[in-house]
Length: 376
Image 1 (tube, rainbow, N blue to C red):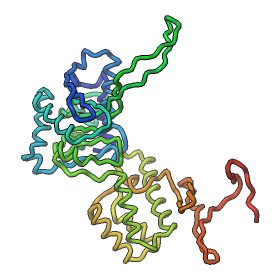
Image 2 (cartoon, one colour):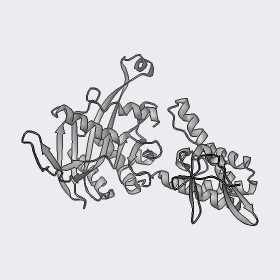
Image 3 (tube, one colour):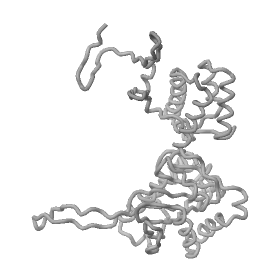
Image 4 (spheres, rainbow, N blue to C red):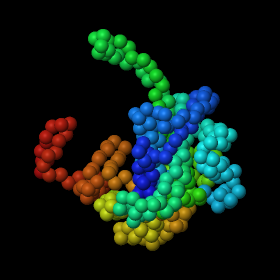
């Protein structure tokens, strides 16, 4: 799913647009014990309660594509004969009314999730009359199809602290009550995927609050699919491949060039307003390395490492490979932070046999908050 498609579904989570009639839940202890289960009519909730519920569920579709939101590809064999996919379809086709199926899904989630606090598993179903693009742009029209989807969220529940409160009517200070408060989602998913604004039974969209955890057990248990590599792991792997393949040829100039190229791609994509997900392929990285004068032998070593780690034809998000908002230089004793667009101010030199990091400076140099002059 691309950003535009995710945004289109996110807009559904408003009281005046949603067709969600019920929310089903399972309250679980931090040890995995089911404490209670419930079914609640959304229509009978107070307006502010309904808005808060839909807002909490909506956050399961928030975040950055490729980092917090991961596309899940469900294998053809699983769709055809797998019990995991059959369970998801049973829930979707029954409108979440199948209690046994709901319990089975909760069991799968509980077995594959570990939180340090109690949590809620919330399940909702929405039916979206998808308008054609032309009619949607004109603000109305009959729908081309109905997209029926599940949204499942795992939300931590924590005991609030007792705060000192001022009771206006009595004009007195007293302790406030403690209560169990529902937090932002840690994990969740949308099924099936909304690809090309249509139902895709071979896909789902996973939400993870942590970009370092790809929730491998959860994905295998719920979807019967292989998890995509987490964003943080992609960055670590990419940097490891550069280091091992280029070795001594991995200079500051090469790192600056790769950082500049990826940063420019991200900025151009942002300025273009293109809603398709931005990706970069191996040949594009190869081109950057070759323009830096890296030998064919080193580039071939990078190719081999890339193929082994990501796959020969993998398309990766540039923002997962390097942070465009950060450029840092570290030594065992010094850490230098540089504005990314000023990366060219940093150089490395060997002077008198000693290695130096040089930073070009004009006016405005401060040390510990004190303005200093650079002596000739």
